[in-house]
Amino acid sequence: MKVAPSLLSCDFAKIGEEIIRVDKAGADLIHLDVMDGHFVPNLTIGPAVISSVRKYTKLPFDVHLMIEHPLDYIDAFADAGADIITFHIEAKSDIEDTINKIKSRGLKPGLVIKPKTPAEAVYPYLDKLYMVLVMTVEPGFGGQSFMADMLPKVTAIKQECKRRGLDVLVEADGGISEKTVGVASAAGVDISVSGTGVFKADDTEAAIRILREAK
Ligand code: DX5
Ligand code: ZN
Image (tube, rainbow, N blue to C red; front, side, top):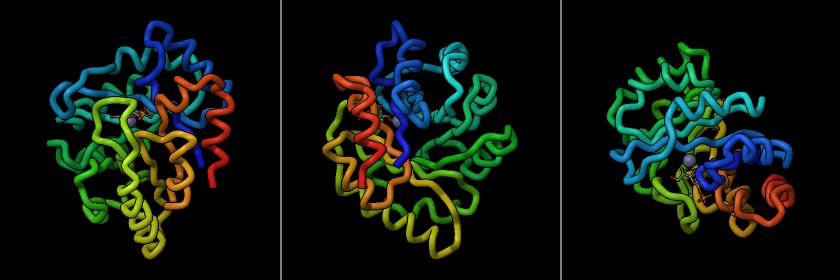
């Protein structure tokens, strides 16, 4: 299990120090949640912040776009230093065009599905993807309860990839902590995003280690 702390739950006044803290504590990726107030009812950070914090770590930046028109902003996030860009299948941009644009910038593309979207929605794109992100909460806010009923989608996507001989990572995002990571791992999750579970833990290193060692 790889661990991607979500900066949504960090202290934004010290975002650079927070990145260094989770890097030293064993994070595999840094997950950055971008929200536009339209696709989800919340606003967060954009390319300017991502670009200014890029210097604090060499870990890959896993940029999760919760915005209505992702295609229009791929260049901006690529310039800012994203390594993986995931966008929602429910957003308004053309899906193939957006995947191709991400690849044309030399970055790794991922598709995200909200809780009400079935696993099968991503099947037509699997051969073009680096990652599928299965939301285990409704996107928009940190600190929500884990939806265990999303896990059959993870297993279905992993099985479909195996059947077709594809090596696509499955990431889960929302409500992942030491209490829920076990079932996520058993379902086939490769990367766990965790915001409150990492940033609000008393011992960051222990929190990341527990997530990583989940069986
Ligand atoms: C929610 C975001 C998540 C969020 C996870 O829309 O995509 O990345 O930060 O936070 P926790 O781990 O607190 O559920
Ligand atoms: Zn996220």
